[in-house]
Structure formats: structure tokens, C-alpha cells
Image (cartoon, rainbow, N blue to C red; front, top):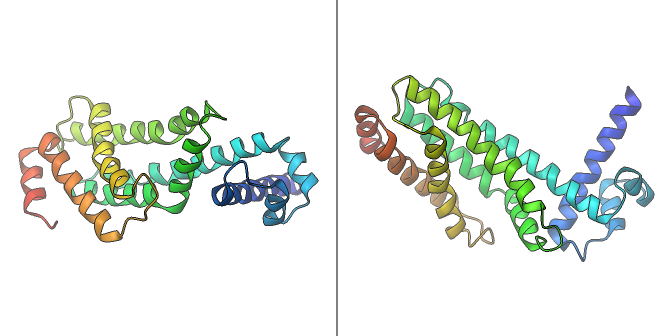
Length: 216
């Protein structure tokens, strides 16, 4: 059991180191020896866990996508059985923007796009692991709020897609497609505008009124 745990931990360290090095150097310029050194293992150990550089790159990005997905999925938890829909949406919006604008998320998008020709299926895999999983989790929470009479979403999946678009569209623009770090004040502005627009379309009259008169 200890040996298995140690192997898992070592693989995790290799993947974390690989993602950091690939993010810094890009795929072509990244060196497996540098990755091994960053992970604190010998170069042959890297190949024992992951057979070649291409497999290492693919696995590192998949692992990073899983981490990003976990943070994004956790961000919708304020919507679970929320008594105050505008407040819960505001909290979820802020958490999602923080998750989507952090260094790991920006590096993941940049690497996946930069290497999409070499790894043509990787973008689809990352989208499935992150955006599509997030949309499903968000749709579930919106459906529950609709059943509780706190929202009006005839199609929660479309409503989830539109809320995500209201957040990520401005974020992509202000971040220059991930090349600029967006200040916290700008993230707050994006979140507030997204929630107001979303509630104007899907909020009940009472919830919408409270969101308009609440803090910006």
C-alpha cells in the first residue's frame, strides 16, 4: 500500500512539474531533464511513469484540466438550496471568475491552443473535462432553484450556458485572451454585470428587484 501511494505521489509530482515547465517553455522547448529535476526525480523515472514527451504533455494538461474542473465545480456550491438567489449567484460568479482567471487556467488555455495542431484532440478533451462538466453542474443547481421558485429557467442547460458566457466573454476580452491578468476590481465589475443581466432574463420579479437595488 505504501509503495502504491508513493508511486501515485511521484506521478503527481512529475505531472505538476511537467505542467509548470511546459507553461514556461512551451512544448517544443521543454526538456524532460528539466521536468525531472523540477519533480525531484531521475530522468528515467519520468519515462517509467510516462513513456515519452508527448504522453507527458498530454497527461500533464489532462491533470491540470481536472484540477481546474474541480475548482470550477466547487464554485457552484453556493447555489445549492440557496434562499437568496441573487446573493448566491453573485458568490458563484465571483468564484468562477477567480477560477477561470488564475495562473493555472490561463496557462492551460494557452498551451492547449498553442499545441492544437500537434495534439488535435486535446482541446476537445479539455473542454469536456472543464467547460462541459461545469455547465452540467451549474444547470443542475439552476434547475433546483427553479423548482424552488427562486428562478425561471425553462431550460436550465441553456441558462447555465448563458451565465457562463456572460462571465467568460468579458473575461477573455479584458484578459486579452489570457495574456493579461485582470485586476480584482474588474473581476467584480464583470461578476456584477453578469448577475444583473442573468436575473433580468431568468429571475423572478422579487429576486430581480433585489438584485437591481443591491450593491454593484
